[in-house]
Every structure is written in structure tokens, then in C-alpha cells.
Image: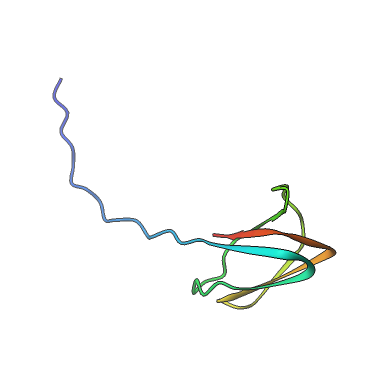
Length: 78
């Protein structure tokens, strides 16, 4: 069986991500990521358990996380 392949398509967009580490427990995490767009945000406590919070984006290069309980952990911005 002969299989003919067509021309390769254009390259996809580059994927960017930023990981913020919050070493001291706080109810407000201010993240200056400089990604140039408003990213999706995933939040995890210091035990790598996903946590919920209010996320705002004052600009395309900054995210502010508001937690009800002071927490340390990390945020993954994609």
C-alpha cells in the first residue's frame, strides 16, 4: 500500500507558561507573569492539592489571587 502525504502545515503557536511559587502563607498572591495575555490559572497548596480562589487580572501581565485562608503553594499560569 502506498500512502502519499500532503504538504506540512504551518507551525502552531508557541505555548508559554509561568509558575509562581508562594513560599509564605498569604491571602493575596500578586503574580507579575509578563506573558502578554490573560492566562488560565491553576492553584495548588504546598501539598500539591488544588485549591480554589478568586482570580483577577488587573492587566494582561498581572494576576491577583485572593484566598479565604492564608496559604502557601504555587500557581501555574498557562
